[in-house]
Length: 117
Image 1 (cartoon, rainbow, N blue to C red):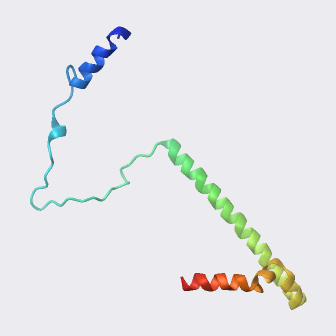
Image 2: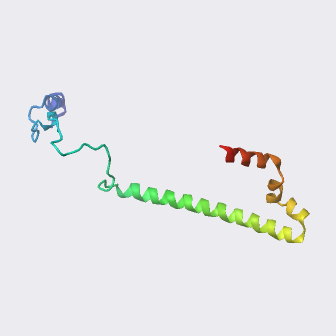
Image 3: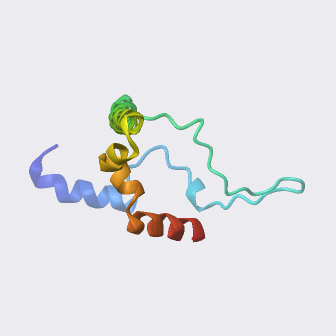
């Protein structure tokens, strides 16, 4: 195609001249027959995701899982520290990070508010 004829080529495509494969079905309206129902549900089973998007989603899910697992390990170590200090004395348990949170009235107020909501 010549660059000088590009405007003629575009206008012929917009007007429909020279286009093949158009049958005019876009103007037809599909009406359900007796016994058929119209549904607004979308089925994602037939949707083919590109491989890149699927890989990206799996990587992001793995990152979230790893972060959650790290948070769980951190909390478990705090609980173990609290229990170990509790075996020594109740005062030692109260001095740990969890012990301070358990004795903080603001934390208990926040918990109560969440329960009420």
